[in-house]
Length: 414
Image (cartoon, rainbow, N blue to C red; front, side, top):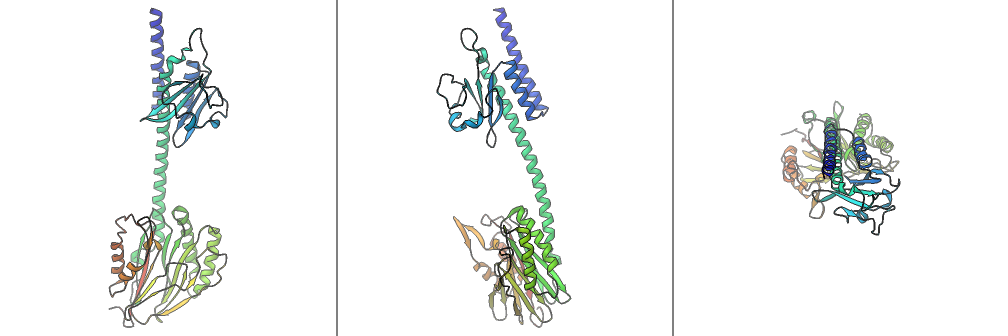
């Protein structure tokens, strides 16, 4: 009786020391491989288990330990079919099995009533009468496995949180850098010949929208608005590359048609046909009051002539950049502005919104906001407020950019 008590004490001491050792290792942040090594040693060397497999779930089911079973054992089982039915420690030696090798015991490991791991034990040796004393340690193995699997998952989640934080900082930096490519409000032309206003609101940290204003000479200004197909980092990178090319090619004296052809070549080389860019590009000469433009597959901007009340959509142009290897045609249009007018350019995020179970497209609200004698700045603010853009409207699912210009009559601005 005394010897039995001593053995029981030794066993209890061993289990407590083993749990303490594992806990200290976790606190010391040892690697996952080291935790698995210690776990395997406890089971095989100290407890004498012949075969053991540890299957865990994080983002998917995977085998963290295979000691004694065949190399492809885990590949040949289906967790949902072969393991999930076991909700408690089960002896299955004599049961029909789907496993590729004989398994004696299945130990489920749960967390918040969800299975997060399974321990499979095989090759149990019998000692005399009855079954191996390993059965005495099953609850201990279950507890130990639980501690190990939760610790490993916590390590994974911690690494993932660090990765996400690093990605967040990179995205914030990318967002700041992309914003630097967009002309600041105070740098937009505002003089006796033209007043320009703009608005930029990426749906995510970075986006595929872009607008720009370029002084082409003392009496001429060029401007554009563009939108890359798709979203995210790839769209932002392509747009940054496009901005550099446009600034190099959009020059004084060169026809817009020639600029577009060369831009298309650059986009094809960069995007390899996987993405394209819609673009509205224009130039305005202060002295002869002529607006020249090309619409390359973009949402047609609105031109509202306030004297006559005429509202026109500017659609003349060509296909988008990067859609075709070569542009088959480029129609450059010219408009003579002899009366006060407003030009409103935008990307499709402004007019494509989630409505009910689908997507609603429409420009009626824009037309209503523009067809008046109020300033363009007031018009843009009205549109932003009405669509609750800055309030995080759930209906908006794309980047939104606006650039526009006010042109005075022959007597100048009022």
